Amino acid sequence: MKKVAGFIGILSIVGLLAGCSGDVTQATQKAEADAQRASTAASNAENSASQAAAAAQHAQQNANAAEDSARAANDAADRVEAAFRASVTK
Image (cartoon, rainbow, N blue to C red; front, side):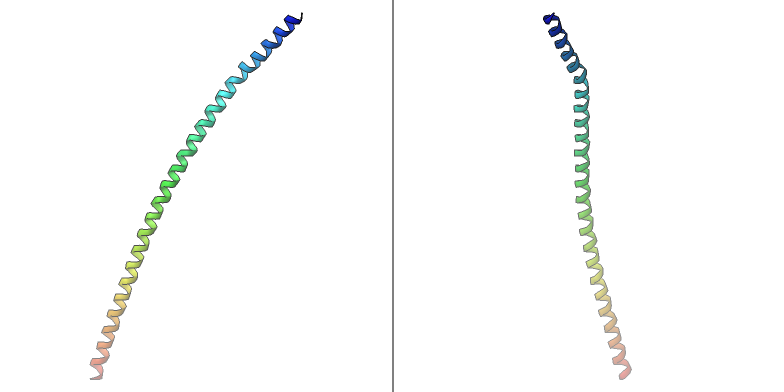
């Protein structure tokens, strides 16, 4: 009787492990797939950040060039005003 009970106990444990192993395998595969998707998303985010930094640098260069152009235009306007004042006062 003890042998039969022990054998049934062992079969129960084996059956339980066999039944759970599929769930564990599926959970492991899902976790690996989720980790891969997260890694891909992180790589895409890094690429986007690099592109944004390059675009910001380009925008800053354009802003600096626009400021230089505005200063040059203001200087030209000042020279025109000075020339006009000089010609009116003569």
